[in-house]
Amino acid sequence: VWQAIRDELQPRGFELVTVALDTAGADAARPWIERANPRHPSLIDRAHVLDELFGIVNVPSGAWIDEQGVIVRPPETAYPRRPAFLDREIKPEDPPHVAERVRLVKQLRIDADTYVTALREWVVSNRHALPRSEVIRRSVPRSLDAATAAAHFELAQHLVRAGSFDAAVPHFRAAHRLQPDNWTYKRQAWSLVDPTQGPTEHFDGDWLSDVRKTGAENYYPALQF
Amino acid sequence: VLLDRPDLEAFCLASGWELKPEGLCRDEVCVPLPDGADLHAVSKRMGMPLVHDAVAGLWAIGPPAGPHALSSAMAPDLVLPDLDGKPFGLRDLRGNKVLLLAWASW
Image (cartoon, rainbow over all chains, first blue to last red; front, side, top):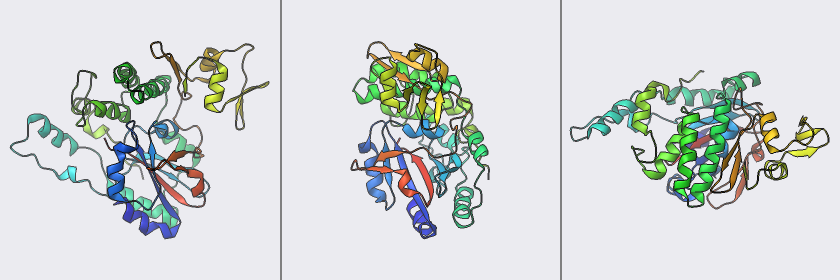
């Protein structure tokens, strides 16, 4: 879907750069990328450097960068269209945890129409670009705890890549404790054990419990255009 | 930034900061340091937390603390590989409007 939007806007001086945040590396992202067969740069960020550089705490997140290389909107929730999971109905055969997940997912703040309309307006008529001070102010807070979480997360990822998942767990847990609203740190770690991000012996949290605790409406912040 | 020893030289090598007479410098920024400052002092001075894993013998130094993740609106010079490992620099797109979209397979 992004490909079509990119092709529509590209003649207006626009380019899309997608970045897969994946500790498991290119092979984890490869099936998706090969299916999409993108004509735009499609990059792999095995070390999650983007998280730290731009302040990304969930995916999908999009940042806007202007012709001079200035960020004019910091990362915000970026869906190209209404995702199918918002319209999934609970089926009688769904186990309770699946039913609850379906119910919670429907409460996530996802407003693809607003986002894509604003993107078009930016490309065509420069609307919605924020002043530099506002870009900085709207980027995620980085307390000393959050900065410490980033250091733990970096260690954890290195240890996973080196094949020592057990050694990585305490660092993932520290990152989760120090920056509990960083869904990227959590989802990346959970998914290394269980692709559905359910409860495991390694971590205190899991997708369902944590979203229930935080409130599904706080999972993605409301867009401010 | 990962380090296999907690010293200033290793940090500079890995991070792009440079030790100069006026302090620790990168691009146009210089942070004055007290005489004989070691990595622990630098970590404290810069608000960049230092984390250690004794078993692995590794240290990680985090990004500078707050108030926000972005301290400047200039986009960092990001260079990342594509599926084939070929590096691509964000800088090559100057002159275009760019949507930098982070996603994940998980």
